[in-house]
Length: 319
Image (cartoon, rainbow, N blue to C red; front, side, top):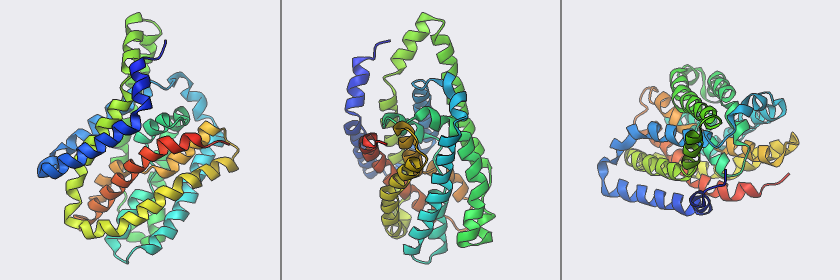
């Protein structure tokens, strides 16, 4: 079916729309101190964004993507060897404050399994292969995060990792939207009205992503205030990570001789972290509030702004 001109216009102007969403979110959080009350809307907004993104991915081919050993190996090396080495270097530039370091490690050592699919799709990466990899990424980070924490800050920190937030996020943000999208795609092939409906939903990925940006900014900015001094210490680390991680992921992809679209997917995955999933886990750390939530939320803001750059720059990556 021919692409809608509305969809074309939205995709061509997506960065401007996302920037407007970020500015509006900042304005609302400044004008309305209680904007943190929007936090319960984050997961529903994410689920909707992922659903309309999954609709654009040919889910019938997921099985083939899941068996792509070369891509999955590159993704694993990028996320679980190269990125941890980068993080081990970066934390040397942090002050020796245990809660600060733990917060940074929690967020930078866990690869994203939700909105990375949307941003990689918008950035002309292989979103299908990345989507197929999400169960493996989730299982691997649950298993490896305690080992990383134990090696970098001690066994006491390693014992803080619990599977609950990871499993909940996968069920709500990946499995649910994925099954719904798969059902729509089956109906699309059999019922004309469903085909028209799916085509209409095709205009929503950009507005849905803009909505997520707005809701997340409104919700998380108020959390930064009580620990602003800690936030200022970690922002340079996050900026450095945002600059280096996608390049590191791209170099790993080149080493594995992946095609360009899969190389972009590895770059997106290496640069995009699991902050919205890891936050509930981080809150279980004794004495976490306000430092650890603020440190993790700060990474979310730096990352979302970075994604606006990635979807413009990473499509130019060629192997």
